[in-house]
Amino acid sequence: MPGDILDQDATSQLAALASKRISAEELLKLALGRQEKLHKRVNAVVNADLAYALERARAIDDTRAKDGLLGPLAGLPMTVKDTLDVAGMPASSGLDAFRHRICEDAPAVAGARRAGAVIWGKTNVPVMAGDWQSFNALFGTTNNPWDPERTSGGSSGGAAAALAVGITALEIGSDIGGSLRVPAHFCGVFSHKPTWGLVSQIGHVPPQPGAHAERDLNVVGPLARSARDLKLLLSVIAGGPVAAKAPPADLEKTRIGLWLEADGFPLDAEVRTVIEAFAAKLIAAGAQVEPISSPVPVDQLMGAYQVLLGSIVATDLPESQRKQMAAMRGVSKLAVTLGADERSAIAQVRAYTATHAEWLEADEVRCRLRDSLKDVFSRFDVILAPVSATVAFQHNHRPFAGRKITCSNGETLPYGSMLNWIALATACHLPVTTVPAGHAMSGLPVGVQLIGPHGGDAKTLAVAQAIDENITGFVSPALEF
Figure 1 (cartoon, rainbow, N blue to C red):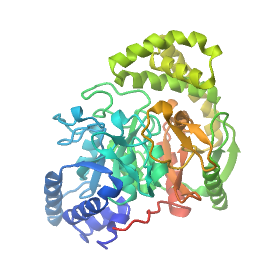
Figure 2 (figure 1 turned 60 degrees about the vertical axis):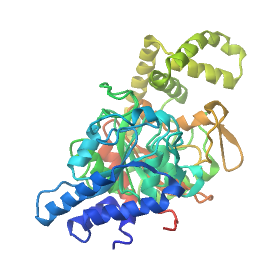
Figure 3 (figure 1 turned 120 degrees about the horizontal axis):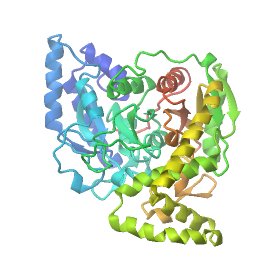
Figure 4 (figure 1 turned 90 degrees about the vertical axis):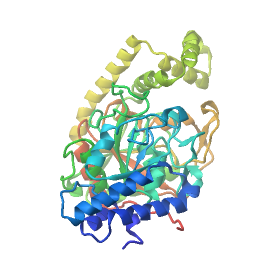
């Protein structure tokens, strides 16, 4: 059992701890040993507090030996995304200036610690969580466990990679532009983007450390190797039994809207093939799967989302850059004479420099679109959609303007197309459970979004658990330890 316990999900590891088949100290040392063996290949964990973790693991073992009262995560080794403050390990968000602070646990982290988790390390992120690749000058690049030449995703890329290789069994990440969903898709693990506001964002960087306001669009949520683990950790960090005791869904009674077509939303053939095969398995299991067109007008969705997101991201930019963008707003008057790329760049500038009136207009569009989704969710329990157009792409650290994503047929896509499929749930504050759907011809994982109605976290998690237990789930990458 000790040799393969790291490949089991958190629920199984907790059962082994509770039955005293393994101690918290032994399990922690196994995780640390795997981290040491895989660090050069994956570079997922970038900071650690080993002395404190060992002390805490031993204290939990002592309490368990005396049959003392323990929490639901008692003795489980865990890592946390390096955008969340952990006492003794402040969120760096990829910047040296932030990691020397004195901080307290973020509320979500404190919830996991109260439940008995042994939090020992922090996982890598892009600078200020602002990329779909996890690299920075401070800690370097996190590699995809399935192919080290490719990205693990971002911004929870270190988290997803650590889960995939068994360095950790649970992770707390965050998402404002696909940052939970893209890494789960690229690395073949599970994630849950909660309904906005369900889990506290306090202690998350960005915004600047010490901020009291919770940002629009951003959420904090769990990553794991099983759907049941997502339910467990979400209940812990949300401060209540959101879904932990809810049973899996009955697939024969589950109505699924299959969304694979939208104007301007490309989808690589190798990803489409996996999702269509996955949908066929759902149908064979008795689920009602019906292809649907876009649930909302995508031009309205993307226009509103660009302003809502740009208004947030701009606050983290240097003042000189914000002033430069403000000076460029007048160029938009020439947009009719410019090409598509130039018009797109101008639209981005306008989003980053949006006035309060423009933000209110985008918010009104967002609320109207979310209200229109009530009809869709009266007909379907969840919407099944891609996470991104392609599988994990090769590392590309050029400036944003020069980046392209290459499809399996050699066609290239704009880097910003990574926002397409994730925009609906983010802009409309909807919950999403991302589940592994299979592997492409390239051998790389493909995940899908299960998008639910506002507040429907328990529903998407229940469907995810039914899929995990009856159709397909996590598959470990073939690595030598």
